[in-house]
Image (cartoon, rainbow, N blue to C red; front, top):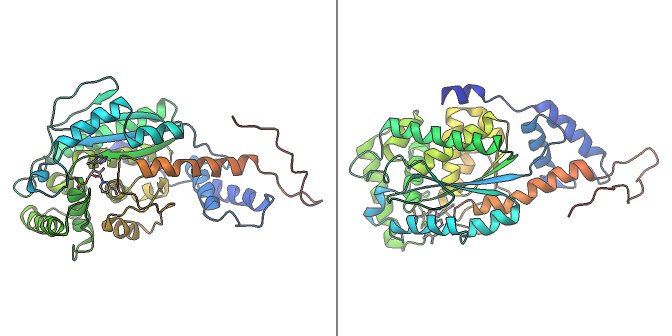
Length: 354
Ligand SMILES: O=C(O)c1ccc[n+]([C@@H]2O[C@H](COP(=O)([O-])O)[C@@H](O)[C@H]2O)c1
Ligand SMILES: Cc1cc2nc[nH]c2cc1C
């Protein structure tokens, strides 16, 4: 992990300036493509190249179970994590559809599902059969948390070595909004009412129970808010740690990583805590309905690209935002520039896309 963190460099601001200068010469009023221009500059900074690439993307979903689910904090039973893994492997989940549309290769990584799984395409990196119920015991050992981060690094680096030029990050784990909310509460301090939400769709009464469970668990576990591995081992999730690793791995390889909803953003927050330079490699796709997401994004000083009332996870919001990266790249590469004579003939581009 140290080796990867040391390999994370600040992004290349000079390449971003060159991209911005190019954007300003394109046949449009300066700045008129708004946030798409910001995205183009960001991609140039990440790649260290004013003409960056985003294609092809790879979609990586980390799956794991949560002992805290037995406290009745989710609308669904733990078994659904396993059922959804088979759905992912059969290509029937929302992320399969959206990753295919984005032209992404899809990877499903089991870091801690509480069942023995088998199937074509499954990447078996199981560390344990779900976390411990962190109301009663630590979620995992520090060694397990570190191992999950290392697996995440390995998965991201492998996808990039196989040709991915951007990553679409996602997760699956019944109960993981409770874990993510607990982590956010540790990092942020203060009251938790505004960060605990309805997850998969729990009732107002269950949401109050969820709040109580988190409050009691934090009082019992007392994680060190300055230590990412300690936080993960106290109240974390194996897939949350895996995604933190994937973020570190992508940043170490100067590759943009598209962050999905609430749980994924909490993983990103942990990665930024480990290495502040990571932040400039992250693209926040959408605003989740989970209230803690707004809080976490504010801590990072980030505004997501989309707001579609999503709360599914799996990387669906990240996959939906991916085409915007490709649009930013194509604007940089394919638009005509103003000449001394004014607007050039508009049929200037010979490039076509299928
Ligand atoms: O991505 C989000 O913002 C998001 C918000 C709410 C729920 N989820 C998904 O729903 C599951 C967690 O919800 P819960 O209620 O079981 O804690 C997990 O599999 C997540 O992928 C995801
Ligand atoms: C059906 C279902 C699908 C999911 N995908 C991500 N989290 C999920 C939670 C449930 C319950």
